[in-house]
Every structure is written in C-alpha cells, then in structure tokens.
Image (cartoon, rainbow, N blue to C red; front, side, top):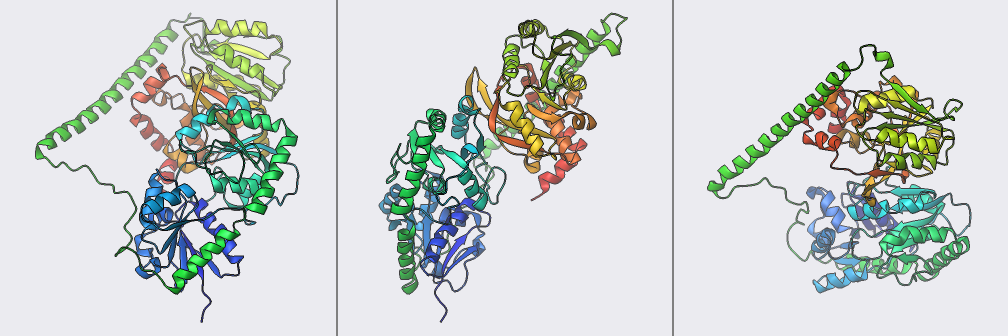
Length: 630
C-alpha cells in the first residue's frame, strides 16, 4: 500500500508569495517524517489529504482542474487574509465547503467560527526554510528595505520618507498588486528575497490598510534573517514585544524611527539578536505543523464530504455589459454615448487649435528677430560663472527653463548640495516672459565657484528643442534632466552614476521621485523598474533621469514634433524600446517632483491623447508586439 501523502496545491497563475508559503509549511511537515508533495493547479491523484490557499487557488485555477467533491472533503483550506477584505470573504466562502480550515490570524479564526466554519489557528513561526543568516554577524550593506505591494496608502507614506532616508542605502520594492506570479526586479521570491533580508539592517513594515494586523509572514522572514522590523503599530504581535524585538510607531514616523535606530548600532544589534533568539526558541513552526498533520490524518481516515453539493463556484468577479432594462432608457444611453464621443472630438480639435496657435506664435516671433541674426547665432550665451571654463565635468545637469522664476533657485540650490562634485549646470531659458533668467543669474552671482552657463532662446522653441540644445551644449559624458521646478537630494547624481557604472549595458538610470503638491508629499513617481511590456502600455518613467550623452545624441535626442507636445519623454523611452536600449531603476527616493496640474503643458497635453498614441504606434512597431505578447 502506498505511503499516505499530504499534497500542497498552489496556483501557477497565483501570487508566488502564497505558493512559497505553502512550500514552507510543506517543509515543516516533511520534517516530521511525513511524505509531502507540492503541486500546481491540478490535485494529484492518490493524495491522502490536500492543502490549498482558497482565495488564490479558486480564483486563479481553471474550474476544470478544481477538486472533485470527494477530494474537497479531504482538503484543508489554509486561509491567510484579514476580515473586512474582499479576499477574506472569498476565502471564507470556500473554507465552509472544505473538509477543514485553518487561518494564520486569531481574529480571522474568530470570524470564521462566528460564521459557522470550524477553523483552527495555524501559528506561524520560525522555519529554517527561510533562514539564510543563522545568527552569524557580518556586514549588511543595505540600510533600509521595503517589501510590499503598491497602493495609495503605502505610496503616500513612502513619499514622505524621502527627506529622511536619502543619505541611506535604501531599496524600496513596491510591485503592482497583481499579478505577481514570478520573480521580477520589484518582486523577489525565495533565495533572492531571503538573501536581501540577510543583507539589510531594517525592514519597513507598512500596513496595506488602516486595520492594524501584524504581517506575520513578512515579519518572521525578516527576523529569521536578522533584519530588524520597524513597523506601523499592530495588533496580535505577541510574543514579540514592541521596542524589544521590533520597533513600533505611527505610519508618519517610521522613517525617523528607522534612522534613529541606524544611528544606534548597539541597540540595533541587540534587537536583531533578541528577536532571532525568541522566534527560534519560543515560536517554532513545528507545533503548528504537527496539528495540521493530525488534521490531515483525520480527514484521510474519515474523508468528510463537501458541506455543500456541487462544484465550487467560480470566484472570478462577474463582468457584464450594461443592459438597459427599460426600453425608454435606450435613447438616454445612446445620447450619453454620443455626448462622450462629441466631447472627445471637441477636445482633439481644441488641442490642435492650441498647438497650431503655439506654432504660429513661434513663427511670427522668429520673423521679428533682427534681420542680421541667423540660425547659427540663435542660441545666446547670457552668463558664465568663473568656474565654468576650466571645469571638466563628468555629469552635466541640464535645466530647461520657462517661466519658473519662483522655483528655479531651489532647483539650482539642490544641485549645489550634491555630493558629486565633477558636474556642471547648463540652463537654457526658452524665452521666458517672467523673471526666470534674472533669478538664475542672481543665484550664480552668489555662487561663482559652481561651474555653470546660462543660455537663452530669443524665441520660444518648446521643450524638445530646448532639451536638444542643452544636450548639444553639455560637456559631461552623462546628462541629467532637471526641470526648473523640481529638486534633487544630495545623493541623487552619485547614486545614479554608480548605477550606470555597475550596469554598462544600461542607457539611462532613474530613481523614485517624491511627488508633492505645495511641498506636501503625496505619492511616488517613477517607482517601477524597467519593463518593456508595462512601458508599451503607458509611460511611468519621468524625464528626471541620468542618460549617456553620446547614446542620446546617436538615437536623435528628444522629439520636436509638436503633435507630441508633453510626450517628449515617452517618445524617447519608446525609441529605446525600438532600438533595444533599456533603463535601470535605483529603488530609492532621490528627487522631488512638483505636481502642477494647472500648468499649460499638462492642460494641453491631457486635452486629447489619441493623436499622440496613434503617432507613437506608427513610429514604433515594437509597441504593438509588446502589447499583444503574453
């Protein structure tokens, strides 16, 4: 007779993090001498009992592969979600049909029992499956990391940490919520994740929602690798004690707490050791594995039937087109659709009129220049600092300037504070109508030691032309685009340059940006790594990047096509895709992006995007192939 087998069944199209959790529990069960099997999608024949994470499996696996009624009676629903969430409701609906159920959170167990599900608590704890540290002290090159799916709450909080953490070595990984089926630069699983935890000093733990439940899997993985957790206040954290085994604080203060802990190396080391010793001695996962094994054995001996007849219902949310029940409403719906189409067309026409007026104004202004001026002298040198001529910069900070008299001094001051010294600043005033140029000159007069030159277009030429003229003037091998209303942190240029040094095949490097409005951080920008398929759908990388100057010139620089007004960055990244070039993300906040939705650039750009999208598709066939690829 074949030896009984406990099968752990994951979902190939599900969250790899959940499959990894199943593998961890299977490792602990195998340590008891019980035969285990880990499978994806299909329930293996001959299993004595099965374990699934219901909210993942029944959503992500085709219904034809779902367990039979008899197999379901021998299945343990392994629940991992908190009450009050969509995913908990999904898990609960399936748990009541399974032979048995466990949950990793006491509060969720209580709620399942209240609903009539005889759930038991599976107490997560230490597992050697996670441990890549083993208590051996050594160098940890990364100061702070964050591992957590992107959502507005987390992005807003992380954006506020930039001003505190910019001097530190930081890795903020904020992958999209779904799908996370395989490892990517922003979503680490298995060895890559555990090695990162073993190389980091602090893990920032931010809750996904306002509910203060403790993210036990993430915390235990960190503690098992000697990474100290700085967490938002949480419930159910016992036996871990706040400020003894981990640091607890409000969401707004986590960066300050992390920075303070990094300044106290003795306390940091003490907390690391105390947490590790506690989970190994008092919180092993083995007892929970023994109870799960006993539960599986009971199901195998007397397989319970599914508590409800029939197949498990599909968990995919229903998506149906709008049906008009009342015939009298059909005309209303039709008219609304027509109105939307007329509005879209009107916006497109308005945008063409605005852009046409801009082009006409530039032509008229150019014709009014003195007759003796020719194209070769159109770019005027307005001022140079004494330090400009003798400088041999590696990095040229390029500042296109148009009507930012109030903000440009702050942008220049941020460059002045850079820890990278072999740089120059090139400012090109694109015929501003305010005191922008005077603000720049006043700043440079106060800082003559800063290598800088100020240029001027007598006639407004637009962003693409301005950037190209800046690149042509630059002397550094690397060029950094800094819009006049943005700022960089002191480590920005040195960290971006180091990223290009470490990755010679990358054309440009970019970092996460703290997006703010009126000085208040609101979200992160440019926070996702280079991904051709994602970029083919939409632009998520800002112009504030460090580029190799010669390669930029070789591919033609920035577009000057007025039809792509406001899309100059996206056009360049699409050309990178077409030429097989790529960028590299430095996953920490190194610059500040000022959101100004009222600006003419944003207003005109967003009026209508259909023409720009069509133009990019025609220019870059690679976009279509990437959008249709699996």
